[in-house]
Structure formats: C-alpha cells, structure tokens
Length: 323
Image 1 (cartoon, rainbow, N blue to C red):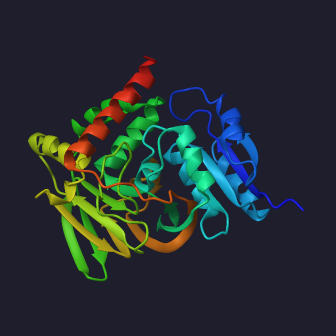
Image 2 (tube, rainbow, N blue to C red; image 1 turned 90 degrees about the vertical axis):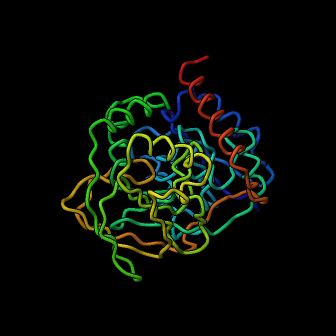
C-alpha cells in the first residue's frame, strides 16, 4: 500500500515577472519523493486555484502548494481553511507578504525544503464581512493604491510605486467609526489596516507585532499625514517600528466593526473588493493548517530590516527590467 502523502502544486503562470515553465521540473526533482506524491497543475483563469484546491481537499489531499503571490495564496487558503488539507507556499509574486511573515524563503528551492520538513502549524485567519484574508486587509489610501495598481494591468514594484504617487496626490482622508468590545473610536483616518500577519509584503511591516497564533487582529490606524510625515512613516514601515509613530493608533482585538459614510473598496491581501459602509472583521483562531519552517525566522535589527527591504526592492526592479 502506498503510504505517500498526496500533494497538489498549483502554479500561477502570471504571478511575478518571470517564466514559470521551469518550476514543474524543479518541484518534481526537489520535493521529497519518498514522502510526497505530487500532482502539478498550472492555473488557467481567475478562481481556478480555488476550484482545484476544493477538489483536492474533498479528495483528502495532504496539502496544496500555492506557487505565486499573495493573491494566489489567498485563493488557495480561502478554500483550505477549516479543512485537514494544509497550505504550502512557494513564493513567486511581487509582495509575498504571508510567506515573508512566516519566514519562508523567497528562493524557490529553499521554500521547497520547508515543505520537505513536513512541519504543519495551525494558523489564525480572518474575515471581513465573511470574505477571508490571511495577511492584511484595509480601507483608505492603501485600498485605493491596490485598486489603481490592479487597473494598470501591470505588475512589479515600479508600477506599484507609480500607483502610490498618483493616488497620494489627490487622496483625502475619510471619517470612520471603529467599534470593539473595549469601546468606540471616531476618527478621520488616512488608512485603517487590520493585520492577521505583520506585513503588506516586501518587508513593509504595517502591524509589526502581529502573530498568527493569538486569535487577535492587530489594527493600525494612520491619522491624516503631511508629505513630511509620509517620508518618516515609510522608514518606520520598513524598520518594523511604525507602531511607534505619533500619527498612529494601534490596538489588538479579536473582532471589530468599521463604519464609514458610504460603501467603497477595501483590499484583502492586496486584492480589492467592494464593501458596504459597515464592515465586520473577525479573527478565526487556528483555522488554517500550513507548512511552516521548523525554526522560526530570526529577529532583525532596524538596520537589518531596512537593508533587507532595500535589496528585495532592488532585486524586484532588476527582475522587472530583466537586468
């Protein structure tokens, strides 16, 4: 009787900027064939990863490997939550926020080594009006940037930077009411970010103290800011110290409700969706099984975090420009 564990690899061919044609052979050669029996598929359209992941979970697959960016990871994880099938991540997108939070290497071969360790962890996930997210969600400026980036039809850090500048020039902060079990905050805000994990991606830590094991959401409210504040905020964002900024309100809660003046967009793991004026956000503790490193990621100093973020950005630019 074959005792190998069935695992499905789903490769998003349009994530990131490079060709994915070499990845099936790499997976076949590097994944532990004594432990795993692997099926490999390329996704062909939006939500295809969801459909294939659902089929795998229903058939009792041990795991599903999401090969792509945060959008691909969200698609797969959304189906695997509250099942016995574990999520594995081989990061190959632009931001790779969840992989970075978990300490999964950006190098594909090293990410496969994490799967071979076969260490399964039970992680929290969150929902916003029943839409699942695993890294961050938000309303305000970051949601507008995500929408602008998606409309551009182009990926990569350069285009994301262009979208950020374009939106910043005409964006105006909005008024919100945030309700938790501890009380109510009524405040005009530039961004309200809710972190299940610690970062947006590319080592931009919007909720630097967030953990996926406490059953709580790390909420970061950025108050209206000036251009000078924005520069300082950027440094703190990449040095994991944004929660120390005087323009920030931060707290931790298992659930919250955001009320705004009217319906509008919200981002979930970087993908935008339309939401009503009232948004209910909840954390679901230990609801997602995932392959994670046996050894947790090492803590970095401010300078190490800034250096890592800088070189990751440079590598992304090089990849985008094919240099």
